Length: 412
Ligand code: PHB
Image 1 (cartoon, rainbow, N blue to C red):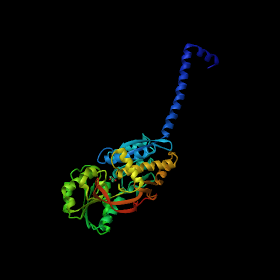
Image 2: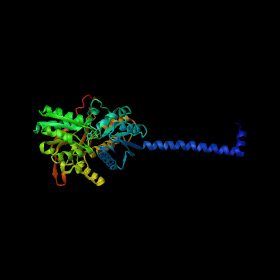
Image 3: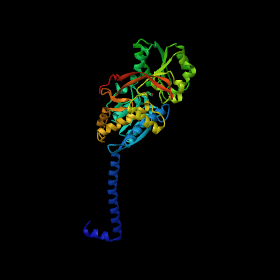
Image 4: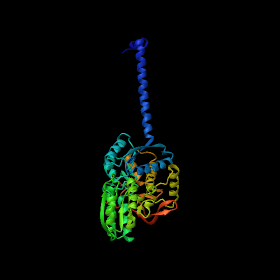
């Protein structure tokens, strides 16, 4: 097109319209570029934390407690780390492995989360493990105890700040046998966590001279009536029943065991969640006399724990449990890890390394991650539920210090 033609178009009516159209096109093109760069810098200014936790189903209260406390930790830093805003995107696992896998895919591929926090259930954790590792999405486990996740299926992308099923239950086997319990009957939900916890207890209990007189596994998420199991436990004549339950199942089990009078013929013992401070308000006096083990008790006498309990009570109107501590510590670990990278979280390998290198002083005390397995090293508290000034409370009978998880088969 020559100069005359251009001039002709410019001053001819039709030409004028075409000229204006061209300008509009140019403006839209420029604004498209500008808009894109704004949205890119927006997403670069946000840290996306996806949760893979139960907000429905048998472990709902656990998922809510963990989320509440993690958000409390973020609130304390003004919801911003190294100048970037924190966005929490919730994924409800429903305590179902197949649902959780779908939610994990969505959080990773569509929401493009930087970090995942979850799950509560061991079976759910086993279902999402490969996806997390293959997509190099750093996962902080705030509860699920499946041993292999920091054992033969460990990964630099998985850091567990809660516990392994072995870590909580093995010490109880030795402790109960040494305290004079000669025989026990095992009872737990029929899924990975129940089986692993009973195995850990059994191994140490038998090694210390105890005898297992029977074991039963109740259908997970389905058992409402523990009556038939309670009858078999009672008839076994064991010195103690050793159980693991959590959520609605823990509340039902403890109440039904009380009505059945089980505590009158044998000691009620088990993994400490069974009478967690989260469930005691519903269990009330039925929880009294239970002997259990946990990684946190509310009576830990440190400034950090007192400040945490106060902040949680102020915000949520009730006392926190060990699940809240695990959520709060997850939040703190995220904050410290990202600060150590000055907010630069693009490199997923570096982010994963920063997460597992964090050490903090939390409500539990000093929190360190075992570099060999990426599982937390912590004190285990053996407690009895007693009648306190404000109702049933956990009285510490013994503290087993700096317990590690064996982490067999892990070579980090
Ligand atoms: C688990 O499935 O690993 C699990 C669930 C609830 C608990 C503890 C462990 O309280």
